[in-house]
Image 1 (cartoon, one colour):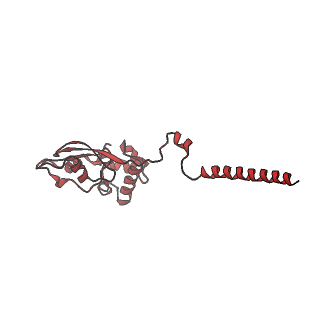
Image 2 (cartoon, rainbow, N blue to C red; image 1 turned 135 degrees about the vertical axis):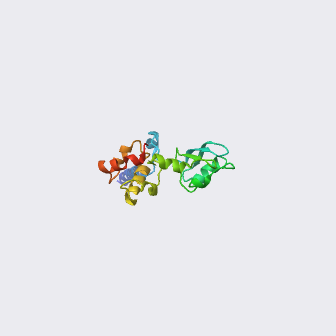
Image 3 (tube, rainbow, N blue to C red; image 1 turned 90 degrees about the vertical axis):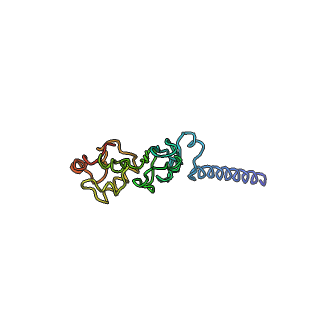
Length: 185
Protein backbone atom coordinates (compact mmCIF):
# COMPACT_ATOMS: atom_id res chain seq x y z
CA UNK A 1 0.00 0.00 0.00
CA UNK A 2 2.74 2.55 0.77
CA UNK A 3 4.34 1.93 -2.62
CA UNK A 4 0.97 2.29 -4.30
CA UNK A 5 0.46 5.69 -2.56
CA UNK A 6 3.94 6.69 -3.66
CA UNK A 7 3.15 5.72 -7.24
CA UNK A 8 -0.17 7.67 -7.19
CA UNK A 9 1.64 10.66 -5.68
CA UNK A 10 4.25 10.51 -8.45
CA UNK A 11 1.54 10.41 -11.10
CA UNK A 12 -0.24 13.40 -9.52
CA UNK A 13 3.03 15.36 -9.44
CA UNK A 14 3.78 14.42 -13.07
CA UNK A 15 0.31 15.48 -14.23
CA UNK A 16 0.56 18.76 -12.26
CA UNK A 17 3.98 19.45 -13.76
CA UNK A 18 2.69 18.73 -17.28
CA UNK A 19 -0.25 21.09 -16.72
CA UNK A 20 2.03 23.81 -15.41
CA UNK A 21 4.38 23.51 -18.37
CA UNK A 22 1.42 23.51 -20.78
CA UNK A 23 -0.07 26.57 -19.11
CA UNK A 24 3.26 28.33 -19.31
CA UNK A 25 3.50 27.65 -23.02
CA UNK A 26 -0.12 28.69 -23.54
CA UNK A 27 0.07 31.95 -21.58
CA UNK A 28 3.58 32.70 -22.77
CA UNK A 29 2.37 32.70 -26.36
CA UNK A 30 -0.21 35.35 -25.40
CA UNK A 31 2.36 37.79 -24.03
CA UNK A 32 2.22 40.09 -27.07
CA UNK A 33 5.67 39.04 -28.25
CA UNK A 34 5.44 37.60 -31.74
CA UNK A 35 6.31 33.90 -31.83
CA UNK A 36 8.26 32.08 -34.52
CA UNK A 37 5.13 31.30 -36.53
CA UNK A 38 4.02 34.96 -36.61
CA UNK A 39 7.49 36.03 -37.69
CA UNK A 40 7.46 33.47 -40.48
CA UNK A 41 4.43 35.10 -42.14
CA UNK A 42 6.53 38.00 -43.42
CA UNK A 43 4.39 40.58 -41.63
CA UNK A 44 6.43 43.45 -40.28
CA UNK A 45 5.56 44.74 -36.85
CA UNK A 46 7.33 48.04 -37.56
CA UNK A 47 5.71 50.33 -40.12
CA UNK A 48 7.44 53.63 -39.35
CA UNK A 49 10.25 54.30 -41.83
CA UNK A 50 13.67 55.30 -40.49
CA UNK A 51 14.40 57.73 -43.31
CA UNK A 52 12.90 59.57 -46.27
CA UNK A 53 14.30 60.59 -49.65
CA UNK A 54 13.79 64.06 -51.13
CA UNK A 55 14.96 65.69 -54.36
CA UNK A 56 16.87 68.94 -53.88
CA UNK A 57 17.54 70.96 -57.03
CA UNK A 58 18.39 74.45 -58.16
CA UNK A 59 21.07 76.62 -56.57
CA UNK A 60 22.73 74.00 -54.34
CA UNK A 61 26.21 72.47 -54.42
CA UNK A 62 25.12 68.88 -55.19
CA UNK A 63 21.60 68.71 -56.66
CA UNK A 64 19.97 65.31 -56.46
CA UNK A 65 18.45 62.85 -54.03
CA UNK A 66 19.08 63.33 -50.32
CA UNK A 67 18.27 60.79 -47.61
CA UNK A 68 17.08 62.38 -44.36
CA UNK A 69 15.55 61.53 -41.01
CA UNK A 70 11.74 61.35 -41.01
CA UNK A 71 11.55 64.54 -38.93
CA UNK A 72 13.81 66.59 -41.27
CA UNK A 73 13.23 70.19 -42.32
CA UNK A 74 13.88 72.02 -45.59
CA UNK A 75 17.10 73.52 -44.15
CA UNK A 76 18.45 70.01 -43.47
CA UNK A 77 17.57 68.90 -47.00
CA UNK A 78 19.49 71.84 -48.46
CA UNK A 79 22.45 71.10 -46.17
CA UNK A 80 22.32 67.47 -47.31
CA UNK A 81 22.73 68.69 -50.90
CA UNK A 82 25.93 70.48 -49.94
CA UNK A 83 24.26 73.75 -49.00
CA UNK A 84 23.07 76.69 -51.06
CA UNK A 85 25.50 78.20 -53.57
CA UNK A 86 26.49 81.86 -53.53
CA UNK A 87 23.65 83.75 -55.15
CA UNK A 88 20.90 81.40 -54.01
CA UNK A 89 17.68 83.06 -52.93
CA UNK A 90 16.59 81.34 -49.69
CA UNK A 91 14.19 84.14 -48.82
CA UNK A 92 11.25 82.54 -50.63
CA UNK A 93 11.68 79.18 -48.93
CA UNK A 94 10.35 78.18 -45.54
CA UNK A 95 13.52 76.60 -44.15
CA UNK A 96 11.65 75.36 -41.08
CA UNK A 97 8.98 73.47 -43.05
CA UNK A 98 8.86 69.71 -42.58
CA UNK A 99 9.71 67.59 -45.59
CA UNK A 100 8.04 64.36 -46.64
CA UNK A 101 9.23 61.37 -48.57
CA UNK A 102 9.25 62.21 -52.27
CA UNK A 103 9.22 66.02 -51.86
CA UNK A 104 11.14 68.21 -54.29
CA UNK A 105 12.82 71.30 -52.92
CA UNK A 106 13.88 73.87 -55.52
CA UNK A 107 16.36 76.53 -54.38
CA UNK A 108 16.06 79.41 -56.85
CA UNK A 109 18.93 81.71 -57.81
CA UNK A 110 18.63 85.43 -56.97
CA UNK A 111 16.36 87.23 -59.38
CA UNK A 112 14.48 84.12 -60.48
CA UNK A 113 10.77 83.97 -59.87
CA UNK A 114 10.02 82.46 -56.50
CA UNK A 115 8.66 78.90 -56.55
CA UNK A 116 6.09 80.04 -53.99
CA UNK A 117 4.74 82.69 -56.38
CA UNK A 118 4.63 80.17 -59.23
CA UNK A 119 2.69 77.71 -57.08
CA UNK A 120 0.13 80.41 -56.28
CA UNK A 121 -0.41 81.01 -60.01
CA UNK A 122 -1.16 77.32 -60.58
CA UNK A 123 -3.29 76.84 -57.50
CA UNK A 124 -2.83 75.02 -54.22
CA UNK A 125 -1.09 71.64 -54.25
CA UNK A 126 -3.16 69.34 -52.05
CA UNK A 127 -0.17 67.13 -51.31
CA UNK A 128 2.24 69.85 -50.19
CA UNK A 129 0.10 72.66 -48.76
CA UNK A 130 0.04 73.34 -45.05
CA UNK A 131 -3.25 73.71 -43.20
CA UNK A 132 -2.81 77.50 -43.30
CA UNK A 133 -2.29 77.42 -47.09
CA UNK A 134 -5.36 75.20 -47.55
CA UNK A 135 -7.48 77.86 -45.82
CA UNK A 136 -7.06 79.97 -48.98
CA UNK A 137 -9.36 77.53 -50.78
CA UNK A 138 -13.00 78.70 -51.13
CA UNK A 139 -15.10 77.44 -48.23
CA UNK A 140 -12.16 76.02 -46.26
CA UNK A 141 -11.58 77.25 -42.73
CA UNK A 142 -9.16 76.06 -40.05
CA UNK A 143 -11.20 73.00 -39.09
CA UNK A 144 -11.67 71.70 -42.62
CA UNK A 145 -8.05 72.48 -43.51
CA UNK A 146 -7.00 70.42 -40.50
CA UNK A 147 -9.20 67.54 -41.66
CA UNK A 148 -7.62 67.63 -45.13
CA UNK A 149 -4.11 67.51 -43.68
CA UNK A 150 -5.08 64.75 -41.22
CA UNK A 151 -6.63 62.70 -44.04
CA UNK A 152 -3.50 63.16 -46.18
CA UNK A 153 -1.24 62.20 -43.26
CA UNK A 154 -3.29 59.07 -42.58
CA UNK A 155 -3.97 57.90 -46.16
CA UNK A 156 -1.01 59.30 -48.09
CA UNK A 157 -1.00 61.74 -50.98
CA UNK A 158 -4.14 62.57 -52.90
CA UNK A 159 -4.15 60.94 -56.33
CA UNK A 160 -7.08 62.95 -57.70
CA UNK A 161 -8.95 66.09 -56.67
CA UNK A 162 -12.04 63.90 -56.24
CA UNK A 163 -10.29 62.16 -53.30
CA UNK A 164 -11.34 65.22 -51.27
CA UNK A 165 -14.86 63.77 -51.23
CA UNK A 166 -13.53 61.21 -48.71
CA UNK A 167 -12.69 64.02 -46.26
CA UNK A 168 -15.47 64.71 -43.75
CA UNK A 169 -17.24 67.98 -44.50
CA UNK A 170 -16.53 68.05 -48.24
CA UNK A 171 -19.36 67.26 -50.61
CA UNK A 172 -19.88 67.73 -54.34
CA UNK A 173 -20.84 71.44 -54.02
CA UNK A 174 -17.84 72.35 -51.87
CA UNK A 175 -15.50 70.39 -54.16
CA UNK A 176 -16.91 72.24 -57.20
CA UNK A 177 -16.23 75.59 -55.48
CA UNK A 178 -12.62 74.57 -54.69
CA UNK A 179 -11.73 72.76 -57.92
CA UNK A 180 -10.33 75.73 -59.87
CA UNK A 181 -8.06 76.77 -57.00
CA UNK A 182 -6.46 73.30 -56.67
CA UNK A 183 -3.61 71.89 -58.72
CA UNK A 184 -4.06 68.34 -59.88
CA UNK A 185 -2.32 65.94 -57.52
